Length: 384
Image 1 (cartoon, rainbow, N blue to C red):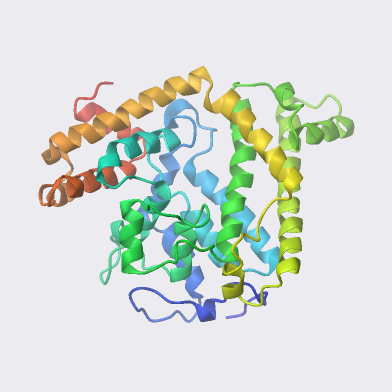
Image 2 (image 1 turned 120 degrees about the vertical axis):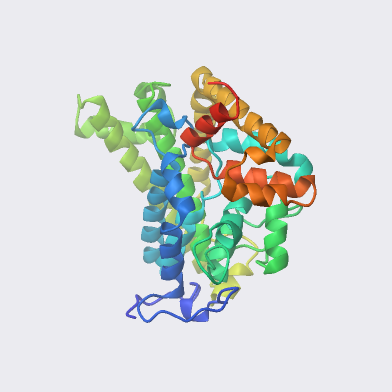
């Protein structure tokens, strides 16, 4: 296999810690390429097509879904990994998997399911993604899950950095089975995937909010990163129509964030001089980061989105509806597990104790798409 030479601090596929269940290697793909391919072919990945981030799925065809978002994150992660000499296949695999555990209706659904699961070990989408790839996917005869490499599992578990206790039950169970060293930083590829997520969702939430007319393009002129980009576009193309004007501005913001990530990461690597992937993990701080000025600017963009988009009355109305659907589904299936589909019913009726039943119900609800959650809500008598 001809591969681009890796930097010393990169995660070398030839030194992978392997898979929990031994399998023969591939003559044509590295272990991390196989991880990526297994994620793409998984049922959970396909369902991301109908899971939204902010808006409910049927609100419009042009808003981003978890699938399109994951593809965008993967594109950024590959570019950054290649530029820095990291393993781009591992970075892509972690990027593609990072949202697998999300519930229907985005963070609203997660909040509702976490509240319902609080007495039963909690719910967290990162932990759920790990549960999907280690247990819930049933495609292979020899094992549950996708049997990903240790490095891919580590990246999923530590998508937001070290996972400090107390851990959700799903994460604690995975850790007990095969330690992912949860309290340390992940390899550089997982760090790249995590910050690529920040780039994608900040810029694209601005784009979706503008498309939904929750705010106007002129409202963004005072924001760091966005304001200078708009000013540059107006100088180059005065009088440009709004779709092209916003498109040109947002791609400049996108590029500026990626360039800053690369510059700051290179500076941190030069200062730390990690000579191996293990040495990079042992640094005690991330190496992939924005510079302080850009991090501050990103914070202002997040604050704008929170105030003008995530807390917009129209979005809050959708959130209220979505939270009620998830809460009703959980309560309904806990009270009558025999109403679960046949492929879930056996596990539910055979569950030993209320916590075990709650985990089955939670797994079923978390895997739903937006539209299927609404259908199930109607089916069990939850209303229109």
